[in-house]
Length: 303
Image (tube, rainbow, N blue to C red; front, top):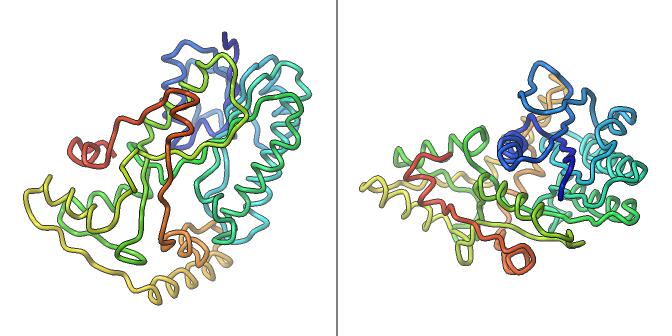
């Protein structure tokens, strides 16, 4: 029986949904946050960051479960991603090991880790997986690699869906590229399923919404057209233009010192031709099955 769950990334998009679902499940929840002002009620909050060893020790003290959702998804240098995604993850699992109470550790990684050559982000995610497993000792480490996660609270993909329901689809890369998606509520359910299994598996799982072979741009347009009962126009963004915009964005970020989302490396991720993956391993291990396909999310404006 889970006694205390220690959570990082609780104030983020995925973490915020997890907080609500974990509290509903009745677990005792302790979470790390830089700012007390952003903290929800019903949780034991530890103020600090992944760079703060003392805060990490307080976070995991007495916890038998650690769920690590914090991480950098945007940045303008490999050092930025490595400092947060690799070093921060290693510090956390080392603190969990030293606590003597932690039995299971869930690392929220990314499907991007499957292709570390694409971006600084992808490379940092794969290396974080390796170092967490290496430093965990006797703790069972489970790695989730969700594909593109969307849902209420997500600011990155929401504009795409809003334009889609207005009849416009902006496409990147090859017309037949295989895309995969996952609703944040389904991801939260996967975490709860992981909490329920008596023995946490030491394994890595890829997660998507179970759309067979994923989506392509034409298929996404067709889904939206059926919901709208009107055509959807596809606007292809030329790769050279996208790369040029990304390079300008990266250059500006060095002046503003603000971490950019769109960079040349991110363009490589966005235009990769095949993000398809299988849920079979995680379904067999945890009994988890996603419930929300893109069509339902668009129909119910659940994004």
